[in-house]
Image (cartoon, rainbow, N blue to C red):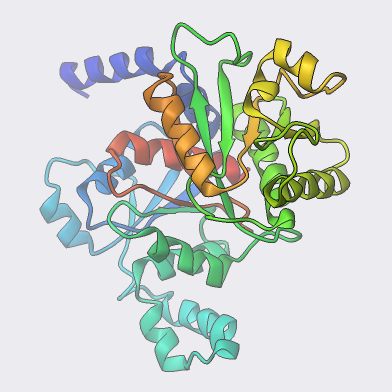
Length: 347
């Protein structure tokens, strides 16, 4: 490593050492997980693969044609990155047979399975299903549907989980926030499901609490958000959150969770005393479950743009094995962070 690279590396370590991203990367380094990146045709993904291996964040399998990847990225050192071409892999037949077994009841033929398995995201999902990798990251140049479809068809949801959901880590500005005791909040669902059943919302709350603990190191205090607090308003939307709260408490009785709570009752102690006296969560929540995607997506963008919070995500949860979707506008650093988080989910 020359002087310039050493300087860049040192600057990066200083910049990240005190941040949640730095903490997540450090945790991932200790796990030595193997993550597949499905989009070797994207230079951002290629650079992220090299960075992950160089910094020992994870072992990486990069999908694509090795010669084409090297030709498009002559300045990227891919030493230590395993490059696999789905079309010529000696595992293709095995994965196609697995795909056929999983999808034949839906009408898939063996010939269709053989062709579908060559698709990089399906191939990556089949690697994950087979246990040949610990997690999958895709979506830099493919739609969310192209990433989630193989996940739902091949990996499927975890036992007891009715639907896949997503969450965002919301990191408070450097100056902090008096309503953010842990300097971080977790929002869900801000990027995946437009609507929820009561059971689905309950499962999202339980999964998000688990993610908050495992990824962010928080002791989760979960607020089920609504425009009502403890029956202050009557509406079918309120009833949904009340029912979701009941189901979540039944499924996870040891989880510190309460609802339905308005946003201010969830975060502001003075308001909590008036609206939800006696609640162990109200006024101190750090995991906020929005009732639907509209509210969650609007809420996280308000916090990001007006409140100065850093938004990490959305991050998928609820799959039987870790699988994450990237934004098509992502940067290389975002992909590296997604790899580290996926490694932690594989723990």
